[in-house]
Image (cartoon, rainbow, N blue to C red):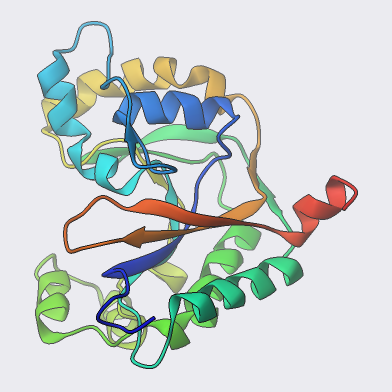
Length: 242
């Protein structure tokens, strides 16, 4: 596939399996399934205006319910979608599944997300490996992208990450999270926090298991991301006797 015809950007995500409570509650909350780019009933929460919630969830809706392992990147010259898929399949055959503490709701700056209840070195290592392993497929960030990232204000390590990996919040600055809102006003975040914790309670009662990776694509600039293919990790396959 030529670069001109390839999707605008790719990303390697973790997305909960569709049969899980987290996937079903999360898709309903965001109002969209990234698996088949299908809209579902919009976000609903007692005591909140539907339009207010639609605005709060607009940004994560575009990406689908996920946690980022390899941030979105344009395909490098000379690389193809098929090569990227083959590399992910090879990696998945080698990579054991990862277990971590159950997710919990947390306010991160001005957005709300689900994060593991305890930091996991194994989970951090998986993300770091994804960043490094698939970086050969990444086209260098252009000047506009670098400027946009820097406008947020970066620490020294985040600047180093941006130059080396094309994204500031990787390696030692990585924090596994599943975004539930975009930027919201503090007053709304304060109201949403307990309501969302209760809304997602069923999905947050079990340990986090990373048994597969998802390759997602952004077909055109600003278009919704959708899942292209899932790759089951070796440890998950072994537990099922494959």
